[in-house]
Image (cartoon, protein in one colour):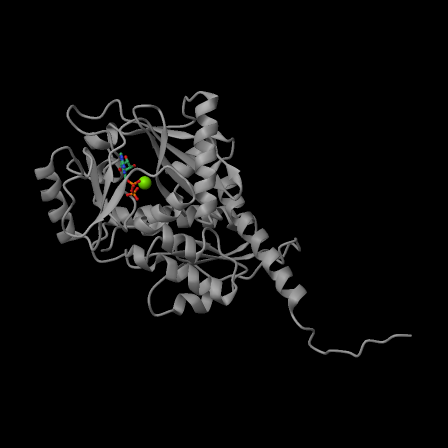
Length: 364
Ligand SMILES: Nc1ncnc2c1ncn2[C@@H]1O[C@H](COP(=O)(O)OP(=O)(O)O)[C@@H](O)[C@H]1O
Ligand SMILES: [Mg+2]
């Protein structure tokens, strides 16, 4: 199944940073998803806002910006391959999140520096059963879960949440996602299976919800979703409406707060768990880990989000601001992390490449 996603930009072409600093400007290609037939003008504006702002941040520094819509015809790649750095805002192609990793994979294969996570991390994290298995294997606390193959074991603990196994951005999550009796669980699983290829049922963890963000190796201040104003009778979860329908009761009832008011001991514990989760999924670039506490105050990992929404009003930017970085600083650091890593990889290739004209070793 596809889900709405936003990334994007369009513009001109680039040439790059000999990443050390000449002053001729770096060629930066900003990639974005131009959208699909069912995208509203507002969806497209959301994508283009980040594209344009990021373009301006680098453009005013004298770098050469190209904003490139990504489509299946691969014309995007002909331009992107000439860039010194690709700033990747694609969260899918034509709104299909399953194409996100292909864009990154193409760039990785061609050896072009790209911001954010790798193909492997994106692909593994998007499939929650795969990520959950790996995280569990690493000893991380993952709420009990199963993939419902159209039906669900009667012994599964309740309440439970039913969510798509391979979506993000709260796609498929609404007021009916949490179920507390068997009959409703069976009905919800059946309904979700009609809509999504794979459906995950997970034990519901109902305490405070936190986000821990990363840029490179740096951990940002912890954020919390304050559900205290959720409408009467609604479960305190971040639904699709809560995330995307501005002014809706679910939106007004799920308020991000950063930095979160947490005792140091809990903060350390959340960061330790988030950090191991990020490393287990080989996270690089930038990411965000979602966690919740249970009734006993123990943290559980809900998911690892590589390349989370980079708009200025989204979670990562809010966390960066709490760290003292304005939006431009966040964007610059994300580019810097990607270039540094690419330089390391380039240096390694040079070190190991056979010399072109082997010469006889002279001894004298
Ligand atoms: N096991 C769970 N227990 C309690 N709430 C959950 C659980 N899983 C998901 N949620 C709620 O649903 C929201 C979306 O789920 P999440 O797994 O983060 O998927 P997405 O990829 O759509 O963000 C979370 O932010 C949280 O509020
Ligand atoms: Mg999430």
